[in-house]
Image (cartoon, rainbow, N blue to C red):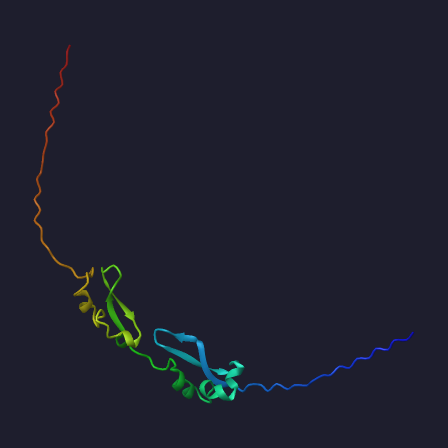
Amino acid sequence: TTTQVSSTTTTKATTTQESPPRWYPHFDSYDETTETMECIYDDLYPDVWNTPSEREAHLFETEENCCDTWNCHTETVAPSDEGRWLSNEEGTDCVFMTLPPGMLDADWLFETRDGCCAVSTCPDIVTTTSTEATTTQVSSTTTTQVSSTT
């Protein structure tokens, strides 16, 4: 008895086109305080972003175009413009905090420490009181008698 086995293998050749480097939003860099993020330039973005429906929203030729769309960390804001003074949790002092722009007008925030301390108890606002002290000196005398018998 003779058994003949034959098999056929079909190989399909596929070519993968590399994604070109582009500027895109780096979501891991999102800063909740400033509501900004960074745009980075490389070819490691998700493949789905290089599809016609996503490309225009996520991939950019220039950093400026990416940042215009995704609000990059491009402007440095002075602390006085983004922070306010507020009472600490215990109400025993005032602290300066950097806050999102949408919170800066809250009625419990103050532009100056003095304004905050006017409604809170701050430790370095000293009230001076004078107290008179009277000192009494007490003196005592001890007498020792010695007697001897001979």
